[in-house]
Length: 320
Image (tube, rainbow, N blue to C red; front, top):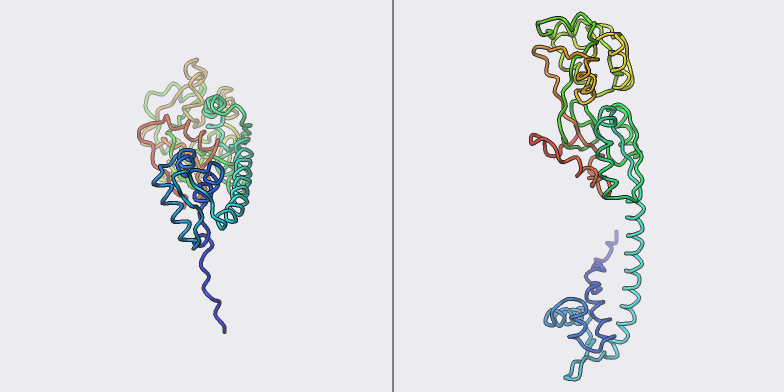
């Protein structure tokens, strides 16, 4: 079998763009010093760059004299080729800028319900100030749906509330949230003095978020030692925090809801917080993105706006 001859890479045989731009400037200005000033480099650096290009090509390109710099015959020919290369590079750069502009013209965000309803609006208002020309679309769903949209390429940045970074995604903690057991004021729990035990909570039919929601995942894990949420049939399974909250206010039964969502209802006594003993109901809020694809453009800017966050926030982590 005949082995292919070794071929020196093109990058080692062709001068770089900086050297070609210098040669074009010398040709236009007739002076190495003026060309160096136009390109923002020193004259010794320009001389060194020019000599390096001549060594690389094996021909003299410029004749220097007290009256200025003049192209040799070979220099005239190389300058013509250099002009075409630089023009092609400028076209490449213009195309790349157009691609960046197209990317930066839109931002697709997927967020779990609590973050979508209670945190993202403020972040998006701030982003609008920074990037008024970026069109933002928001897809709200549970944490499982957010991960699926990111993995399918349907979103640029996601926010979830589950136990960990979903598989296939990287992420970073942007803050923390506490889940709260709440009832309507007329519920018997609202009159009790002792804290609710984990066993009591697990054995009680609750108004729950749907399967796949971060709230449900965290609550199920917190009650795992007592059979989890499988220990009792749910009263209702609802697809949003707002719906669950409204059901509790109406007296349908107790629920476990994000503290972010119930401030007004607690203050107005439409809901009552029920203390619970020995149940870890604190959870992390995370920004997530497909593994290996760190957010760029408006997604990076939005992520930056979430960084006014608690001091215990973590560094980026990778999904399992």
